[in-house]
Image 1: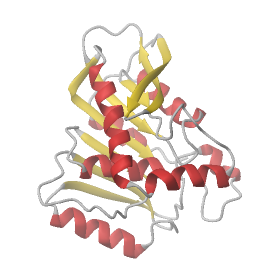
Image 2: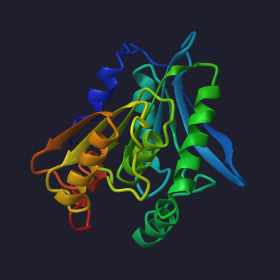
Image 3: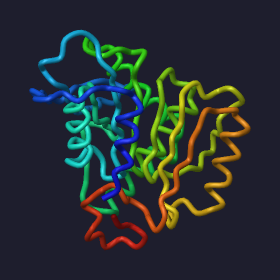
Image 4: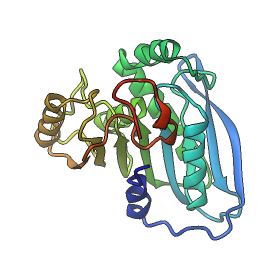
Length: 238
């Protein structure tokens, strides 16, 4: 499994907690009339304020993989929140059901932006979180989501997309992205082909964004998730 997520951890310069006393809980918040249920993880021994990280799941929804990533970040000293993008903490293992849930949100970019910004506002309110040091990472669908967070002009330190979709019907405006942007992309990802990559890079240049684009040779879609080792979906593997 690729270890590129560690780049993000190192970049925010948070020292590892030697013996983390992991605390997790479901946290409810709202976007409009929709009740969302995120998964909060942090070291209960923390004192004062610490960096926060939003973790946006793949199209499957708020499943164990996203929760595990939040827990790993908590063990590094972050206050991490795995985000609910569908409502009521929904997730699915059925591709058709997951696809339907993802399409509903992805097909409505203003809604996607409202939901991820609602999660950001919730994390920022946590008394353990230093709102000046909050970032967002996302996988696949989640990668698309954090890029929309950046495009929305959100006040975050940075976003990291792991094998996320790069296209958008609402491209960034000049000087509209306030945070740093990192994209970790599989060179052979069929879901983000070269023309999409080129359009994204042009968008970032036109927006005068602070961005980096890392390409991993021979990597396809979903390369960070060990569960994809036995994936039956074409173009998805570790």
